[in-house]
Length: 219
Image 1 (tube, rainbow, N blue to C red):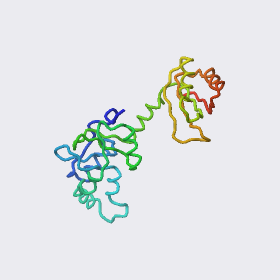
Image 2 (tube, rainbow, N blue to C red):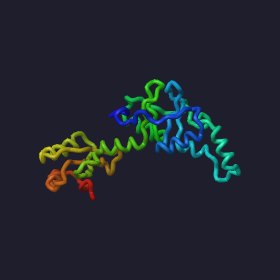
Image 3 (cartoon, rainbow, N blue to C red):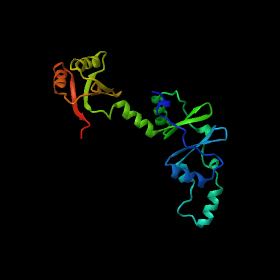
Image 4 (cartoon, rainbow, N blue to C red):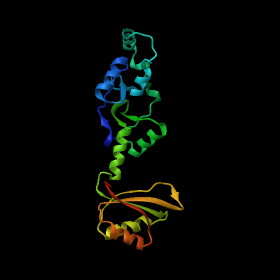
């Protein structure tokens, strides 16, 4: 899956010459946390976040009057407190979702502007990555979650899948974290049935170590 499949197209944007008050109002009215800052050619020159707006705003200890604050904030431009383009991490529509997630994790950022050349065509956020994870894991599908401990050897997962096939059960997803416990990988299978008793019995009869079985959703 690629960024273009889950990105938010036509994101809310703002001009670098817009005022602090304009930016704050736009974030509140549109319910967004990230504003790509674009010039008149739709080229990205920076990024503004709700955190930037909070940090650029007045502290509670200010001695200025409301009128004075309003005047000064009206003079403060987005370009003065945004993150500039040369410091941003971006992706293109053909970037893989896995790569986008890794970039957000490694750089500890909440969004990635999506560019074609210099033009903003979308944005991808932590919420989009989480939604993709839910979809890939099949968490919205009814079934059974089976956790097993398998030796990290070729063919081990194939043997489990053979049992599922024998019982004519479709697979929803497989997840296998990279770490090992006592020389074995923890592997989570989700299958599209909640009638699992005979399947588990056959797996255990064949020597597989089944750690837990949970109907999904569990409530």
